Image (cartoon, rainbow, N blue to C red):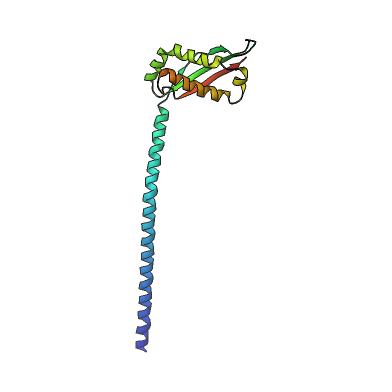
Length: 160
């Protein structure tokens, strides 16, 4: 009987060793897979943070140049309709403000030329402001000779 118990004990030890080895191997596989996923996602996260940080820095470096209200007669057969608009130009750095102030007369002339060529119907439709802003942005940058103005904001818009 003593021999039978020795034989029963040995298979239990081998079974426990195999189970322990499988548990350790499973744990190692999980750790290695987790480390790989963390490493890959960590790189993407750092790239996203860097890109977002760059956008935030670019966005904080914005300056504005305000213009006095500009009043123009609209292209109207009666000649009694006009548009009053006040604009603010967005520029990427403060040094460009001096250049814009030097060319203010040319910029205002461009604005007046573009706006006085519009009919009443063209300035009262819902998408009119967006079209006008885009057209003015293109024309003003052409006058300045480079992409100085990054955006135009309409701060006052009156059609009479």
